[in-house]
Amino acid sequence: MTPSHNEAPPLKANVVARKLYLHISDEWQLTPVQNRKLFSILSNQQYEAWMSGELNSEHKDLLTLVSYLIAIHKQLHQIFADPIQENAWISKPNREFQNRSCLKMIADYGFEGAQTVLGYLENQLN
Image 1: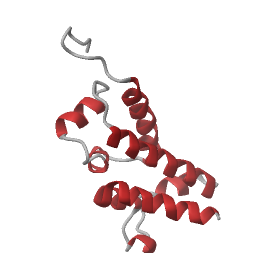
Image 2: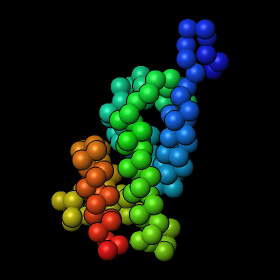
Image 3: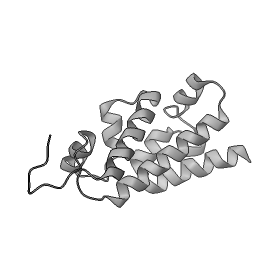
Image 4: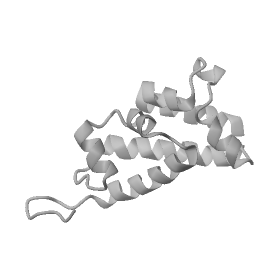
């Protein structure tokens, strides 16, 4: 969709964040429902605009959450040699998270959940 004179083009940061996130989402084999739950910080209108590549306003929380997901993705690459095991871990219940999966932690607790998961993974490397 080409922006009209009254619409701003999508912000480059949003476009890049979306591209990176979609790559991660594909690797983790997330469903549309799981994707939406992870981004509950966005209104439905903002989420739809972002997923279609047309979000034209800066959304600091969106970019922060995507940066956490990128960091989690990177940590998983460093921990697991097997990509299948790495990508499955994200959806498996974990005792450290009260038998919630990493995805559930982030969906339920937003940034705090993402920080908890990232801290757990960082500790696994130390």
